[in-house]
Length: 568
Ligand code: LR7
Ligand code: MN
Image 1 (spheres, protein in one colour):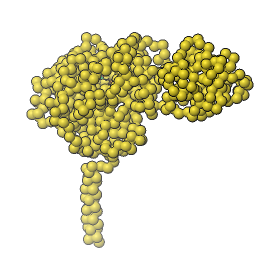
Image 2 (cartoon, helix red, strand yellow):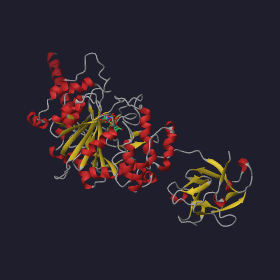
Image 3 (spheres, protein in one colour):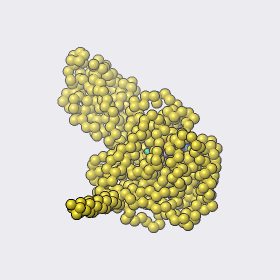
Image 4 (cartoon, helix red, strand yellow):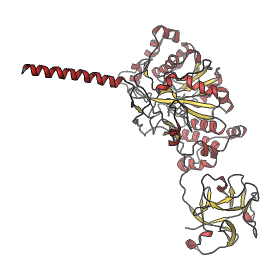
């Protein structure tokens, strides 16, 4: 009996040991499906912050390897990197007081950030194939520009140290800090003791847009790198970005932005399948790469085209930044500048991409920890209105429908930005919609049924031809050939649309099958005239006789006047 019990215990012990080993092995092997998080949605910087709680979506992603950690540098190396800077004194001069709310000042858990220390190992969140990529040995160096307003010392220092630790030293020309009039000038000044770090302090609060321009104007390297003041860069974050810009100076590139938890400062991998998008209220959001593009991606290290960038972390050639007009410096404090820059880059001959082999962590917050002198909502409206008015052409109407409160709000003069757009010979927003962001649908419009009256007559379709005929029938019983659905930009009857046959004056107008991509079918009202969107010629009946054509628009000419008369 005792023998049997002893055997059973032995078997159980062996099983337990084997089980433990198996468990540990499972945990260490490159996992086929480690979890990762997408960037939080519904906050970040989609609009003025506040209220909308952030949501971390955990989902599985088979492209990252956990447990490869970037090591902090050895002590002797560190001494060199930080020069005479006294890190201990810098951090301990500002500590959370006992009983103080750790979230109050910075909208993240300051206690945790302080406790972490200025450097730590973080997980290398890249796809494993990134580690074997090779970059040019003669990459140009970069000026790193970090603007901040009352950033916590521990997060600011960690940002700088992560850059110094995880970048090839020779690629850093300088780190330019712009202190945007923080309460304590020493936050910045003391850091200038670190080799390569420079500190510029604004004499008044300027906001991040003008601060970055100030940084760019003093930068000496040919490539600019922008960072927020609460980041941690990951292994080899810099080389892929500089490489892409070196190969083509019109590229503007961003890393995948990993998430640093605002509560416990855990470093979490973001999904590698996201790009930047927005809705018509100019609210930024992360969205899935369109399925066709995803299918076409055989190589997970490939760049991802993105319609817009998040805005805070990107690399851009300095001459290209200057050539394209830097930023709109009439934008204040925070917000909107990422749309303005993104539209401008795409429409004026450049491109935007996210590079999966570059990873940078960022502390995403749910509210702004600082004040907006003009108020948070008004500032966001001013900035986005400027972006919409300068770059969105006729599509700005959708911005105003989505954000009715923007109407009538002050946004200053945009004359210099319109001039810039003309000088750079930038493409229309329609081009951007069709080629860069076709997934952004224009809102469904309610069709308006109408007759189009000229004098006492009505526009009527006879087969493919258009004529002026006596108006027939009344009210809703009007026969279809005189009943038009006006759904901008189309003028349609069932599935047939009014289309021009050529783009020159005198070209005939006729009915053909509707297609949303067909430029010959796009019209917009201009007073009582109907103007073709391409070329700008007007619908003309050539009354009293002759087929309907397009000709030069002439105000008040009877044959170009079409009074819509709505039929309910
Ligand atoms: O008045 C100010 N002066 C400043 O210098 C206000 C802010 N700032 C600094 C601030 O200290 C910080 O370093 O500007 C930087 C950005 O401000 P945050 O961190 O409060 O903004 P955010 O992270 O919510 O903002 C994102 O959107 C902004 C829109 O204007 C900017 O483009 C930010 O750079 C951008 N951040 C990122 O893209 C990081 C990834 C976040 C996402 C998505
Ligand atoms: Mn930020």
